[in-house]
Length: 298
Ligand code: NAD
Ligand code: MG
Image (cartoon, rainbow, N blue to C red):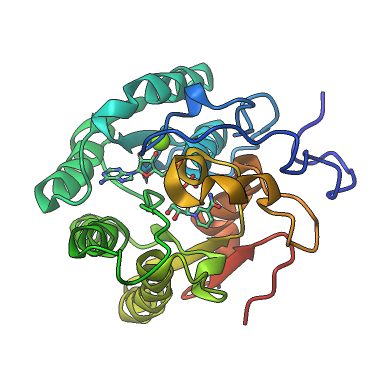
């Protein structure tokens, strides 16, 4: 059985886009309804105690990159508060089972991160149910493609920024009230923060904001012994992309533009979150770790 340590050719490790893409779903998209399902490391991620005893909040934990991260955190020894939208309960329950199978606690707190009170509630759940908060992984995000600024509504612009940027502010603010030295925050930016697509005006610009927010907050809280970093995924096969993240006709070429020639899988993102969450990255803060299939970042 291969795991994330098995040496293999990364160009053929996972399929290219064309033979696997499927019809679009209505947002936020359920992983359960994807065919084929993304690989979130369910069968392959092998932990080695890198986060033993830590208490984590993971947003967007039901599917895609958040699911892979929640599974990896649990297998590395962390208990996890899982955040997701109520309509994603079916996906979330699969993650609960996987976290519990790893011998760790899963606390489910469904809700909407565009609500500040809910963001505070997530942090309270970690403190109340797990006894504290050591890791905040902000992975929830909203991406809907719109061809022209003429068609981009104020409502969508607002929702994208509330989900991708304001929630980050609210969650970090609430978390920092409880975090002790050694704690870590990991945000999720994107290749879109470096190579913005014309059809992702609101999303791409929100991801630029996340890079700036990460660097500023990192400098602000470094003296308290708290590190803040980000992961910048390239094109990754998740519900976000098939539920309006990309136009339907673009899905068959998704990821083909990367030097590795294929989309990434959530399982290939999780080790970056684990590294930034663990003490191994003790001298790394204010950094964005890119996992883009070779697409250049500054
Ligand atoms: P995904 O659809 O599996 O995950 C996104 C999650 O965000 C959803 O599962 C949902 O639980 C959560 N979410 C969205 N709106 C929310 C709201 N209002 N309240 C609470 N939760 C909400 O897709 P993914 O691709 O794994 O996305 C995870 C992160 O990765 C996002 O921040 C996304 O921008 C980023 N990202 C993805 C890609 C990619 O190609 N898939 C590339 C770069 C960055
Ligand atoms: Mg989801």
